[in-house]
Image (cartoon, rainbow, N blue to C red; front, side, top):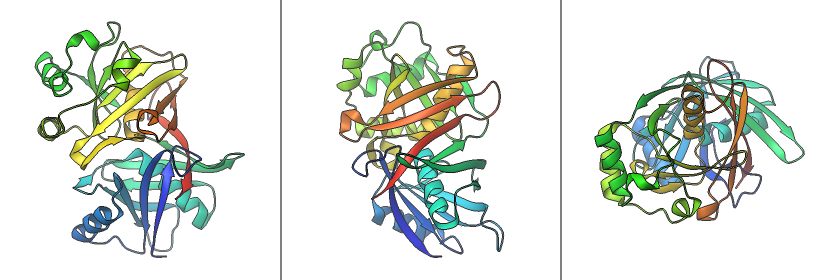
Length: 278
């Protein structure tokens, strides 16, 4: 059973999407080994899976590691894991037992290839104080003038925490740069995983997600942040559930990704996408 696979999540093209490692074995390696494997793979995250109960293939103990540290939950590596499990054990429903709770993954395929849908743990949001907002914007050399006036900055959770910044101008998103060390320190201090920076579109959002705490400048697709965004939209009354929005990410870094976010009236947020072997 011991295998290490590389897949690009939220795309049908291995040159697009967000690459993830998926390590499947009879037992999880120790922490030092998982970190070393993740660093060797070199992607923003590698998921490590082992059967949660002997002889069962429907429940998997799952941990996620970046090249620098463990991450409690990772959406794109979950999608990649679902597709890898479906290839090994057949399409159906799998339960990933993660550090943040059980995450259900439904797998199937369509005319474009294998696909997976994760259902997050229950989302929640908290205010982003003025002081923290100013500190965050300063790392991008932005002021509050770049923010869309109809959207309130907040910190959203669907497994891990992501500040949500809604910009008014797509050109500002396209030109996004930031102070890597300063943002990494701020995110470490606050316990944030990525920064969900978005601009509204006709059917959803264009997004970019800095990830310096993982040793990565930017994620081309961030399923955990998309789930957190879905929770933010519901909590702040920006959608009438049930609703579906599309998040397009990665185009600005040459790895276009498509994340479909389904927002029910209550409970976890569902995030869907394809995955392609690299």
